[in-house]
Image (cartoon, rainbow, N blue to C red):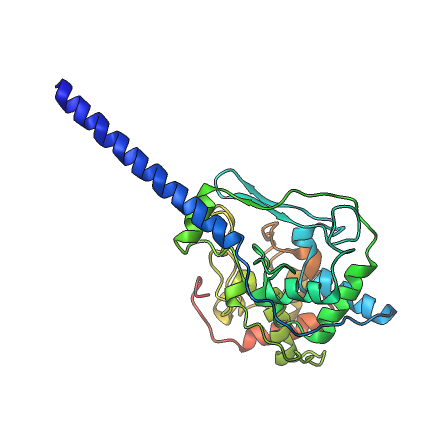
Length: 300
């Protein structure tokens, strides 16, 4: 019996050592990827100036691309997710205050971060939704940068994002998309503007830059990539999901966060942003969603 217990102890110890070695390898590999530098696109980008650009930029930032959901209403940075297993995800301070990036970032630096998911030193940014923002027109992106430069300085030094063991293991297993960089085309030619009108084309543009990240490129909804598993699933926005919504009902939902039957949307739905959308924008998105092929729930 003692011999059996001794052998069993040696076996368990060996397995624990192997497991520890494997975990250490996973942790180190994920860390190396987070610190990895990638080629930085060489094209230049210059944001406009002027009151009209700042006003348009405020609307783009607040209503369409929803920066405040992660960076805070003052855009001074905040903790977005704090999960003891996955990690702590922190959105940086975008202002020119103490701890902010605004004072040191050039227009090109902002463009790299927003549309390419790359820091100015070549690091891939974690959980920066650049696969959506790559579709922003040069005009809207430039206006957004002009608005960010106009923000009051917020003195707030936020801690860096930290991905813990489970988060790193899920990343290595291909189950947690830490970086948007691989999903970006990194085009260097100008991104043209889409005429602002209640058209399918403008609705597609708004959806690409502000909705597809959660609801999926096909808008079938389902689990949202990269968030804790207890978060709610995104709704199916195709005709099979909300095809019964009239224009008026769709507008009411985006303005109030209340469905036609009176039930409330989950608080994660960014009503604070969608209620800022204009009638033309809401009409365009409704028309675009109605034009999509019906898909079962979860068909992203």
